[in-house]
Length: 140
Image (tube, rainbow, N blue to C red; front, side, top):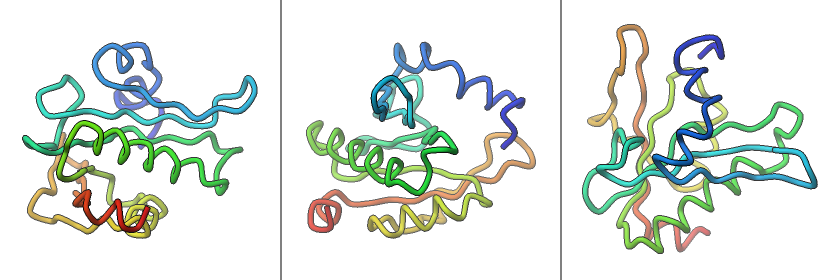
């Protein structure tokens, strides 16, 4: 999705995500490497999660930091947060063309949940993935 879209503006608005959800960051020295938004049902940034679940959104890694495991560690941090909160599963939605993200999620044990696919606006289709936390704790 283009960064000049409404979604791009939402991605750049880290301060709102910090107030309305948990904003997790990966950094080294003084350089931001990546960020992800962790949310629980009923919170302002929750879109897909149901009671007993947690979700993450807006996973982004600086292009110069890609292929270094930053995204994987941010997802693992979300799994840890969800576990501490007693969630039984973590869910997420991602654009259909985000194939590297799909590979990351499946490598961590997430499976597709097509019954939860959705479209926030016409022309934008999102795929749902889910991971029962008992599975995540085994594959860590």
